[in-house]
Structures are given as structure tokens and as C-alpha cells.
Length: 455
Image 1: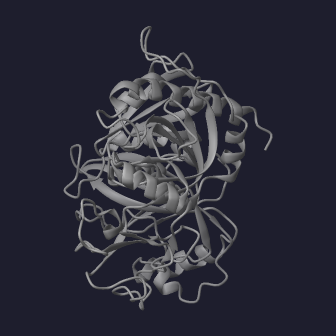
Image 2 (image 1 turned 180 degrees about the vertical axis):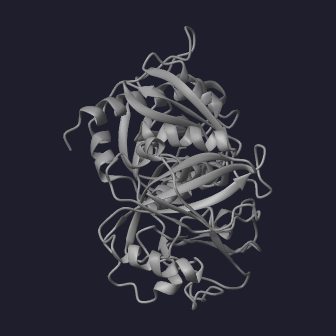
């Protein structure tokens, strides 16, 4: 294996070519010890995009080697490649000096249909460099963990929702890797390898955490679970709802006062916004108005908008739009097998529901960074979009998984009626723990079914 090192960002390594016995560690990444592998310096922490034939990053791993000046860190990107026959400009492909350029060009053209490794060489001093790179020990731990994958990622909003799973007899804990403010817990659920991670509240936290999970770890699919409000009058507190589609209902175009449904929205003509999804008219919810035949509201209308998405299967910077994001079809088929599963109905010995909660697959759920406890909006969102669970994270997880081409499903236990119940209190104060327990019960059963499924 030829390893070529160019000048590092810190100026310590300069044009060194040597043969390095890295097969033992590299085997953790490639699992194919006898592959002919070419290692080329790229000069960036980002996965290189110099070869159009490289369709998919298969794995990322990290190797380290001690030098007198510090520690060399190698970010390894393994690609599936169809060959290099269509490369028109080898000069742009090879960033090395002129005297070694021709040698590298010849070797590049000879590795058609082989795995290609691009290596970023970073000199690391102490635990963290000036650009905030992860510590070498953390990257090594990630590489070793990935060698034992793939895993199911289990993404959870809060600790009170994670607690029942951590305490479940179905969960067996292994190591923990902490970075970027997140804790990634490795273990098994019903003997299936999993990574648990808590996101924190809201759509932004959920998106960041899910992207970290998928970017750094060998994840085959994602299960997201937690509690939710219920907008569907046919479902009840304690039930678990599993939607087939999720939408983010917090992206709006707020129309100026005086304009209505027939008026074009700002930037609509450029394709940035649309009137196809519908709107909320605030004047429809004005109360205590007397002595006039009609009334208005200065807040006017808000129009719901789809998200801009950039799937890994698409073209970078070429946007697509999605409002209803589907869950994985295989995962949803497995979820259908759980319909009717009976769940716990008692919070404790003295507080019980007068019915037995169960599992339902439903058409739609929605998310926004809004805690919904309002009867009027609950009714509107159900009538407008036919939604069941309303929460603050699921669609973010769905959007990231959709763009990363990763199977996904969200399982939400209903802790309250999103404002549709008693005017005196929110039911979540009483039933949050029951809902959390029921969500975990369904997650465990889902993983059992997934492991035994022949789909």
C-alpha cells in the first residue's frame, strides 16, 4: 500500500512517500485485507468529491501514527467506485508535485472497479487542534465501534423518555462515546446492536443529533420515539401512534395584512414559497366580537411551506421540496404487525385510565418547535391535515434520514390531548411517565419484530 503525505496544514509534514504497515487497523475499516488499495492525500476533513464515479461512501475510519513532531491522524473515506475511465482532467484529480504527478496518474487509471481511499492527514497536538477537530482517542473509539456495526440508531428527545429503555431488561449496555455535546450509548436491545442518543428539545437539536449519528457511525436505520400530544379524536391518552408520514408545520410564509388567498406570496414566483399546502386565517378565530357583520385580524394569514431538502442521491446545491416525509416502507410494514398491541393503563396503584391503551398505525404526524396546548389549533391541524401525534422533534429526524437515504420510523406515545382536554390542566402532568413506558414497550416489540421479519 502506497501512502503519500503532502504538506500538512501545520507545515510539519512535507511530501513523504513511504510504505506503512497499516493493514491491521485498516482491516477494521475495509474488512477486505487483500484489496488493492490506493491512499491519496486530499487536504480536507470533508469527504472528497473529486471523482464523479464514486457513488457512495461505504465507511469512514481513522488511523493514527506517532511522529517526533506529534501524532498523524488519517481520515479514511472508503468509496464504491465504478472506475476512472471518464476522468477528463487528471491534473485536477492529483494535487501532488509535478515530479510525482505522473506516477500517481498511472496508478489512478489502473484501479478501475477498486475501492479508493482518500486520506486527510492532520497533525494533531494535544487533544484538540485549533479548528476544533475531535480528539484522536475519540476518533479511534468511533472507528473501532463502527467495525462492530452496523447498528440501529435510537434517537430520543429527553432523559425521562430514555430512562425506561435504559432500565429495561431488554437493554444491555456497552461502551459510551461522548463528543459534540452528545452521549452515544452502545448496547443491544433484544440482542440487536443499537446506539442510543438523546437529542434535547426541539427540531434543531433533533436535526443536529441525527446528522451526527449518521455522519460518524455505521447505522443501518433509525428508530425515534418519545411522547406526543394527540390531535386525533379517535385516539386516547396512553395510546401509541406510528405515522406513515411526517411534516414540519413550523415553516411559514406570513402574508401581509390586506392580502388573501388570491394574492401571490412574496418570492413565490421564484419557487421559494407556495400556496399549495394551505393556510391558517387568524380572523377565523377572533372571539367576543359584537355589532358587526364581519371582522378581520391584523395577523392575517400564515401559509404552510415544504422544506428544502438535498438528498445524498441528488445533486449538491440542487434543492428539492418535501412536506410529507415518508417513513421507511419496510419499517412501516413491521409496525403494522404491532397494531392492537395492548399497553399499560395505570400510572400507579391509584391512578389508572378507564380503558386499555393500544398501538395504532396512522396516516400522519406533525412537528414544530411549539408545545401545543391549544384546542382551536388542535382542531385546525387535525381538520386541515388529518394528523394524530403532534410533537417537537420527529419530522427533523425524518428529514435528516430521508436526505441521508436511511430507513426511519417514529413511535410516539400520547401523553396529552394538545389542548383538547380539560381547561384546568394539561394531562401530560399526570401521564408523561405512563406514555414514556408505553413508548419503550413498543420500541422493544418493534425491534423484536424487525429482527424476525422476513420482509
